[in-house]
Amino acid sequence: MMASELQKPIKKNRGFYVKMRILHKGRQPEKSLFFRYYQWILWFSFTLYFLTSFFITNKPIQLSKPRASGSKLSLPSRVLFESVNKTSQQPYLKNPAMFKDLKIFIYELPSEYNENWLSNKRCSNHLFASEVAIHRALLNADDFRTFDPKEADFFFVPVYVSCNFSTVNGFPTIVHARSLLFSAIQFITKNYPFWNRSQGFDHIFVASHDYGACFHAMEDRAIDNGIPEFLMNSILLQTFGVNYKHPCQDVENVLIPPYISPESIRKTLEKAPLTGNRDIMVFFRGKMEVHPKNVSGKFYSKRVRTEIWRRYKADRRFYLQRHRFTGYQSEITRSGFCLCPLGWAPWSPRLVESVALGCVPVIIADGIRLPFSSAVKWSEISLTVAEREVGKLGQILEHVAATNLSTIQKNLWDPAVRRALLFNDHMQRRMLRGRF
Image 1 (tube, rainbow, N blue to C red):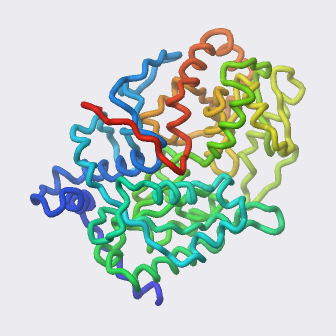
Image 2: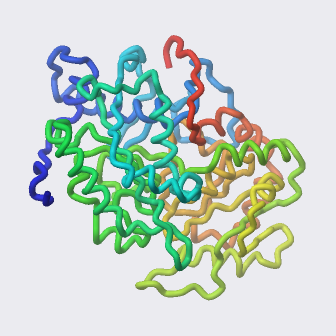
Image 3: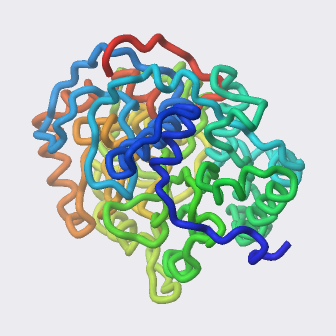
């Protein structure tokens, strides 16, 4: 089957469609009134159900504020959700009971699309492994998984495109992603009627790569390639997000956290608790090129990491390491501040790893959009330093350490913050009571 044989995407009111699916043959809604609201319903559903490890009760978690936050929201709950295509946030959903009958159907694809890739153990543990983690969580989510596609509200397409590791450098290569995904859609279209029924509007894919649904590690190439036309109507769960217009997020998407193994976090914290001694002031271990290479007119990390190494490699306040070390999580538990500079893409698994291990993340990536930013109060648990201010990094962190570091750490060490950002195969549930 060629691309032209798939039905051409037709723009339509997704809010209207989602409302009809959720209400199951209910009243005809007014499109202008419900369009945005039920787009929010859609995004909420996924962040609430399979991106979280538990459901938060209606009891607010009291957090002290190290500095003023622009958000008016006070409830740190992942009941709130993000979309790049909306301009406003709704702080509360008034009828959580509406979701009790929500159903998701998981396509059973041939093993070459997912299971076969798991022969390499790295597939389920590397930085792009959220595609595996989300699939596993859904398979174990008996409360809302359905085996009858006719009663499904949404359809999950489990394709692992990040497990093809280069034999040269060991890094994931995703050159085959587009063809593998298109082949999966061909299979679905041939064997089920549901893709063509909605032109893919109710189908969900994971794109946990550097530039998300553009499926390329280099930004210029990612932008040139764009998002595949056959995915333009669907829902993308992706780790890439910026707070300005970008072709690689020009699709309905939910911004999800990078994958970090919950088991590795648990084992590390058993040996070194959050509140233990932190004798390293500033920590970073990772690629810092002394002489960055020009790759198609671009420099790795926009030379930010090179500048960090050049300025602070001899500074006793900074513990900087350029080489791999399997026990690096123990170093994070000893650190007060953990640098999270951009690489080729703005996001990094260091962000989640630092939060989970109680080290204040120092985000150095201009324009980055953070996961669950309406729920996780990033301004209260992290610091943001502009790329151009790297030269003042020592001064900035000294000031924070002398003023409100203890307050930030108190907020950061709340267990709810850690659970909000980690994936789990089996979700723990708590009762939802009253108003969110």
